[in-house]
Length: 332
Ligand code: KG4
Ligand code: ZN
Image (tube, rainbow, N blue to C red; front, side, top):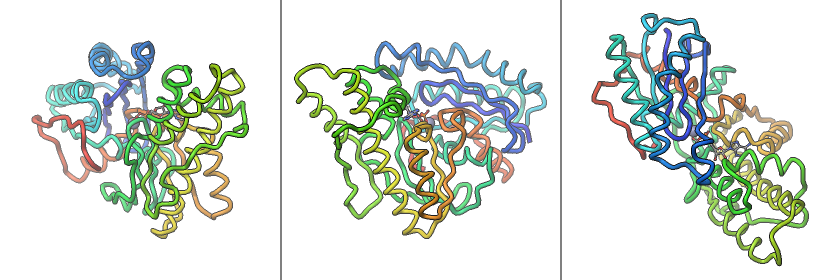
């Protein structure tokens, strides 16, 4: 089954062609960083407009690189939500029009479901597993028993981990998106004597809170006599990353243990973080766990990740109708 996959939930327009829900023939991502960087964050209306401009040529390019003609496709899978409503509507409307014109089925899937299953494009991870979905909009822990079988164990009660990285970077005047910049500075520095709090770590649940951590960084900055110099920026970044990684890994480990799970899949843009990858690799050794990270291109927003669920659902006979609408807020 040959699927065209489309993703436009936030600030990346992405198109992919995937065979049988596992073989990536093309996977293109058109980033909008240049559009939003000056504002220090995503401007929803600008995001929608850019999606609209690039989606047609991007799909043509994805088909061409895959060596696939439109009439060879068996279906279209698209992110239905959650995300920015205007941005989602561009991908969704395109997907429905394309499917209608080609007379093939269309299926809308959940963005986080896409992130969680992306790993299956590279490795066959057996179910059940624990999924830690960490992105700019989400920080969730799920027990995954199969495609479509997700039980939420914990989530952030305020900001997402990626959002905290971005906001802290903005406070430090480092630019957007903040995650990769903080990651790079953290790799080149140690924490100095800075220790940021680990919110909710002692609470007997699997929820996270990152807003307090952000405030702790702000309080630290306010106490400095002058603007932080290069060394201090490195140490603040490093200490913030250490605290974030500590909370994410400890809560994930606790949840895995309570659920009797030995496999952990880490997904979403923050799964690119080198500190998180390193700490989980250490824990995999000491705790005898199998921890899986997709390649960076499959961690960040992309369209190929949607094809795993899309293929499964279409094969089972599920179809979305042409009145399928986007949903900005949608629990998995
Ligand atoms: O999954 P994603 O591409 O989009 C959403 O669904 O949100 O995740 C984007 C988020 C951003 O907040 C970005 O700063 C963060 O992932 N991110 C990172 C790294 N690379 C991207 N955070 C920490 N370290 C990184 N290396
Ligand atoms: Zn995402």
